[in-house]
Amino acid sequence: QKEVEQDPGPLSVPEGAIVSLNCTYSNSAFQYFMWYRQYSRKGPELLMYTYSSGNKEDGRFTAQVDKSSKYISLFIRDSQPSDSATYLCAMPGGGADGLTFGKGTHLIIQP
Amino acid sequence: DTEVTQTPKHLVMGMTNKKSLKCEQHMGHRAMYWYKQKAKKPPELMFVYSYEKLSINESVPSRFSPECPNSSLLNLHLHALQPEDSALYLCASSQTLTEAFFGQGTRLTVV
Image 1 (cartoon, each protein chain N blue to C red):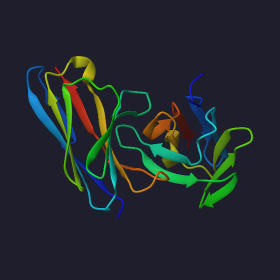
Image 2: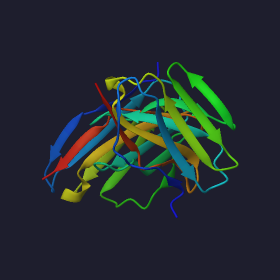
Image 3: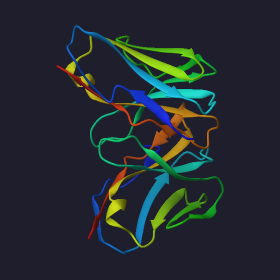
Image 4: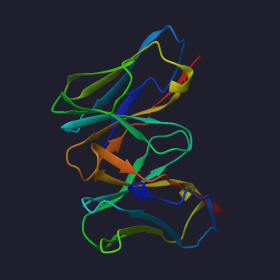
């Protein structure tokens, strides 16, 4: 079992919809949880990070962590075509002093 | 300023060439990283420098040689690469485990 599981998609939704992106993890040692957005042929861009269970909001983005279920989510409200990208969840720790990434979910927002 | 600058943006090299990738950050971050990313895959950790000392080498072949001349600079020296080494090479930096900032990457093609 991989340490971080994420559905690669693609996930296609109409403009204006609420998008839900999810990851599950198996390593209880993970304490911090990050979401990155990556446009094609660009480097990952840090969107949000959270530490504890609960919600964290930043504009149209909400990150949610449920440590008891080892489940994290990223919600995007009022989705825009410019949100079309690959979204990667990431957690520091695990087997190395770097980030353990999920596979990334390819999101397509249809105009 | 959360910028990590990588040069060059694109590189084509032959299997007998020697080339170097460069990375620079001026955020005072203690740790710098090299990741390799193949198409439709998440970034994979290659090397970690912490306080200018190599702390992690994820079993990377010796044809990849990292160097950290000072706290702001990170190089990746390439020699005798194979076509399967063609990928997006990403540099990142972080001060804590909670967030890592990535550069835009160098797209490397080995011919």
